[in-house]
Length: 278
Picture 1: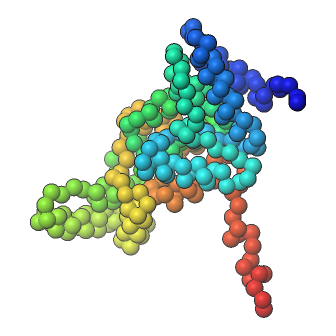
Picture 2: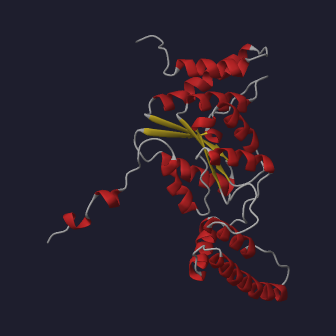
């Protein structure tokens, strides 16, 4: 049996471990946990030609959509994505578990993808670490993001977000519901008129279909973010590394915006007529 070998990207691991232990004294158990995590999780990245760390919300429907996106990244057989929240749990006395995971996986991955749908939870710390350490290889995918401040209709996405805000307006009773439905119809019609006046071409049918698709795949009110989130998104937007989405299908398609191997597109590679008898 061959002896231990030097892992790939040994310099990256050295940088990550230095950050993890910087300035603190830890018991032997913490060292052992870091080594255990490296031995369990990093070989998956070593064996792939292209590796991705996927960040975001890991529970409920948020987690479902996050993993759908990760699966799309895995479609090329020579790529590997790891969802941070799905990795090995650690039992440390001093070093926070998140600190170990984000430093090792973030340093070792070729690219980092953050899928965001809300302002609560651990998303802000993740964004802060990525902005500080891994900005150039991080790509963010915020649901319903249209910019830092937008007071008027400037793009098709603005119109869609405004329409969703109208659609998800709350009402308390049946009478109010009926009145609100009529009010919503009028507001959506007014919105389309205003959009067309601004040179944004979208029809009532298109807007209705988009809302139906959205409620079928992501039945959520428009996402709201803190100014901290928005500032981070704006930074990556300026770098060309921010890709907003509205529906699950859009999120799946945006996996192609990540660097790495191209996913197979069988419908463009083959002519079905070539497989049919004349």
